[in-house]
Length: 327
Image (cartoon, rainbow, N blue to C red; front, side):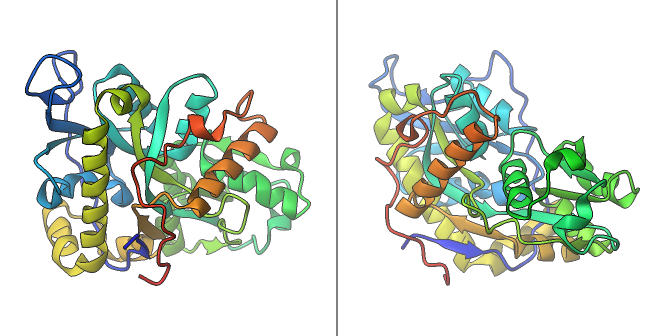
């Protein structure tokens, strides 16, 4: 069954650092040509983000004979760069970064969903509405779905973005900037959202009520890897689905282990994980939200030209069934 369920228990930051160098190979096969059977797939993901954790569990829930190596990087564009260079084979990464890459002719495709949500629009005690942002310092994450949502919300509320003092920050910087009064509000990803809420911040409005919905991250593969190893891509997508099902149904088994091993503030993660929806499908609804994201990124000037949807999404591998929102 396709899944899109909120994570409701605690999760600590999982970091498994693998140094990327010229000596690190990606997929390992039994022969020297493109048609050789793949025995190991290298999967990239981001460090320090709980909704990027699934690849660490692929080995335990593999649906075939492929084994998995996991590489962690610091940014979504770095994951896409690693895919294109062949340093990694597949990745759990940003849909927005993939759209931006496709607009430049970079051939990385979404092959399955991974997680929705994980965003928040947070302000200090003086900000009760979007209109209160006028003249305020507002943090944003460049080239992100959160930045798209911010602009769409401002348009809907009749607020000119030029009337805000925008502050560009990286994902780990939002909470500190907010907590030290360097910014008055932000629309950004977790876990800064939950940290800010715990420190007295308040939600200004939902970030999920725009045309792009809760679109966030996906399972990605380069076009080269899809062309050369379609059976391996299919097996990884099926393992991703099996892992997602396990994570949704057995949180009491794996989350305590992660907290014990990696530490972290359990109360913060309890809040953050209620703001994620795991999924492994590529349903028409998700595909439509990605198409809307492409359209809006072009309209807002974040990309020069909108790539075709088929240059961003490959629907050949994942379930097309709509997820059970109540799973």
